[in-house]
Structures are given as structure tokens and as C-alpha cells.
Image 1 (cartoon, rainbow, N blue to C red):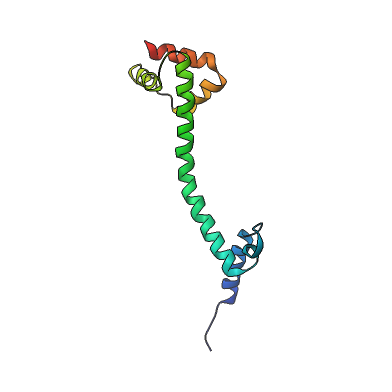
Image 2 (image 1 turned 90 degrees about the vertical axis):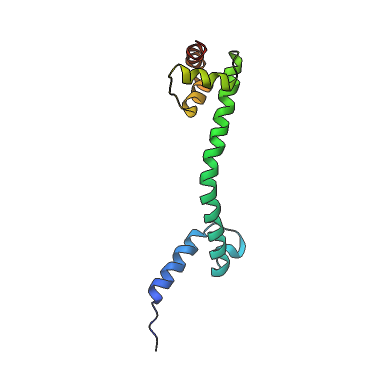
Length: 114
């Protein structure tokens, strides 16, 4: 008679089935279908954690570009001006300034223009 660790294998399955909670149809209660759905979902989650960073950076750049153009500068001119003025503000903060604190952004643009 072979030794089988049913406690551990059942626990493993239970963990996966708990993750499948809220899925539609057989994905939530049939082991093989649920396992495949969970694995695919984890792949998407891993991929999209990386993609999210790219998407947000692109959004910040668009916002900074739009705000810089209101003050007569392109995005690249503005970022070049910041670098030459030794101002180190990241794009996330610049985008926030552009959206929510236009007077502060205007001051930063003035520094970048010099």
C-alpha cells in the first residue's frame, strides 16, 4: 500500500478552489477547469502588473505635454529645460502638478524656460 498525503493535496485543491470563487459556470466548482482558469488569471495578473507601469507613464507624459503646450513649450523642450536647470521631479509628480496645481506647474515651466 502506498502512502498518499491526502491532507496536503486536499488543502492544495481547496486553496485553488477558494481563488476561483466568483468565477462563472464550471470555472468555480470543477477542479480541472478552475485550475486552468486560475493559472491563466495569474499569468494575466503578472503581465499586467508590468503593463500598468507603462500605461501610467504614458498617461503622465500626455498630461505633462498638454500642460507644457499651454505655456508654449513642447514636452521634449520642457523636459530638456528641467534637466539643464537641474530640477529632478519625476513624471508622476509633474503630471499631478499639471492637473491639480496649475500655478505650481507654471512656476516649474518658468524655471525650465530659463
